[in-house]
Image (cartoon, rainbow, N blue to C red; front, side, top):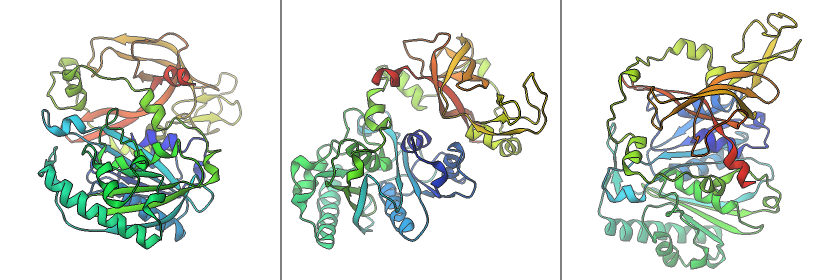
Length: 436
C-alpha cells in the first residue's frame, strides 16, 4: 500500500528530486529492517536517498509530517512522506466494524505546491486509550466514553484551541477539518468544542474505508486536497499519546495540479468482499489448509536479493545501448538477434510502463488466496517481456492483449523465518480506463 500511494503521489514528478523518504505506521511488516528503504527501492530512487521509519503512535503520520516540514525547511531536500496502516481488529470486536487498511503520501518541498504550511502545534500526554504489546496482533482498547471525554474532549480540543491562538487564526475560518479516529461522530464533537463550523468537518470515509489508524489523517488530507480550492484553510489533527495540529493553506497551484488516481479514484475502483469467511482468509485471521502443493520452503536467499535488488524490488530491466533491445532481467549478454552484444545494457525501469498479455493460464491446483491463480507472459510497451503473476482479475477475466499495470505485492511469506518477500505482479488496467 505504501508503494502504491507513493507511486500515485509521484505521478508526473521527477523522482530524482526526492532526497528523503519517511514512512509512518504502527504496523510495519518488519520490526528490525528499515521498511522505508523497501519503499525507496521499489520506487527506484537514488541510493543517496535518506530513509526514516516512524512508529509507536496513531499520530505517527502527523508527527512524521511535522518533522518533514522542519527537515525540509532546514535543507533536507524534497521529502516523500508516506503513511500506511494494516489496521487489523479481532473478529467479533467493535473494531472489526470500524477498521480499515490504507495508505497515503505527500511530497514536501520548498517550491510551490498545492498547499503551504501556516504552522503546527503539538502536545505529548500519556493518555493510554489503547495499546498493543510487542509481538501481539490486536490492540487492547479502553472504555470509549472515557477516551471520548478525556482524550478528544479535553486534550484534542485544548490543543486545537492553543494552536489557533498560537497561529492567530479564527476557528470559524477553517474550511476543512481533518481528524483521524475510529469513533463515529467524534470529528463533529471535537469541531463543536473547538469553535470550528460543522460544515468544515471533512468526510471521515468511515462508510467506505473505515479507520486506517496512523494513515487516516494523511488519507483524509489527500482526499480533501482533491476537491479543495485556492485560499482555503485545512486543519489536520492526529491523536495518540498527545496531539498534533497542522494548519495548511491551499495555493493557486492546486488548480493545475496533476490529476493522479487519488483517494477518490482508488475508492471508486474498489472491489467489495461480501463473504465474511473470505474476508477472514484475506486478512490472515484464520489458519487455512493450503494443500500439499503449498508445502514449499520459502527460505529467502538474502545474498541474491541484495545482488539483484534493482530487479527484484525496483523491477529494473536492461536496454541494450547498441540495439535498443529491452529485456528482463538485465544481463551481461543482450538477447538481440541482430547483435550478441556484451556489457552494453543500461538500467531500464519497467514498473511504470504499460504492458499487455501475450499468453496466460489460469491454475486451480496451486494455492492462491483468491483462486484461480493467473500467470503468463506479458510484454511492456516499448519492448521487453517477462513471466508474471496476474492479480486483481475480477469478474471481467483476462484475454490476449488485456492492458496491464505493474503492482508491488507480497510474493511469498517464509512462515518459518518470518520473512515477507516482495516482487512485482501485473493487474488489469481496465478499471482505471473505465474511470477515464
